[in-house]
Amino acid sequence: MPDDTGFEVAPARYIKDGREVCDLMRDSCAEFGEMNGVEGDILFAAACLTHMIKYNHRVKDPVTDTDKARWWREMYLHVLNTENPDPRHNRPDFVPYSRVITDSVPLPGFEAFFNIAKKD
Image 1 (spheres, rainbow, N blue to C red):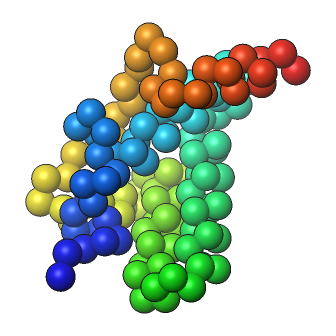
Image 2 (image 1 turned 45 degrees about the vertical axis):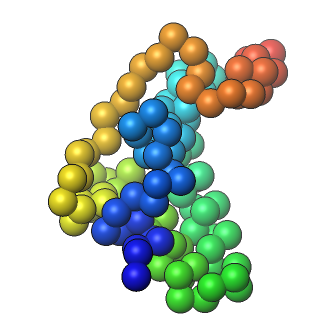
């Protein structure tokens, strides 16, 4: 049975241009944070918490959703303190997160959001 939680392998649907979507999210949080004077990893940690809450309250597949909530909790703890392991650390092909800086926001549609946020 394939691992749908992301602990053993990244599900293919979460890979974009050779990187995991959670890493793209973290890059976006860093960029948004820089534009607004906020620590990007704090923003990403908040995103991890929201995903954890979502999976804790979802009833689609209680076993898998509980595991996914645990994955996001472990990522949250890792982002706040890198002495805590990244939930992906047991994967055979694990590569620790490294920010990728691009010329533009990596996710379509975010540019307008960032521009709105900058006006405040």
